[in-house]
Image 1 (spheres, one colour):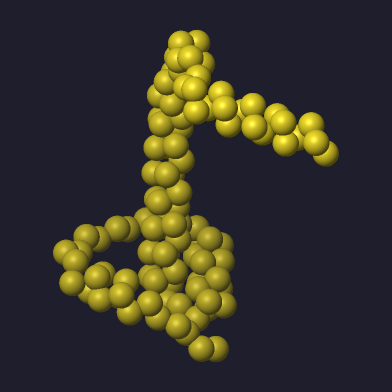
Image 2 (cartoon, helix red, strand yellow):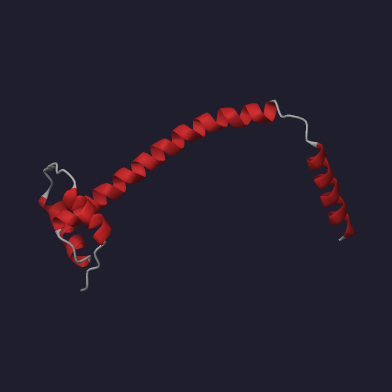
Length: 104
């Protein structure tokens, strides 16, 4: 099985300061992780690091999206409730659009 390495990521990881992470897992889970790593042509360590990075990125993005969504809801509601009058150019564009749609 051919393994493709992302050299940009690999060089960043090699130069970065290291930290150690340990976990106690069941033999069943260890076997499952080992099999999945072998299927992808990776070491168990590489597989676990990639999975942890993906899970961390997804959790961060999901948390930030929820926080932004709550703030954006307030801004959006205020914009709807206190909408400014349409500009003259917008009124002309809408009238032109309406005229075009009536022709069909």
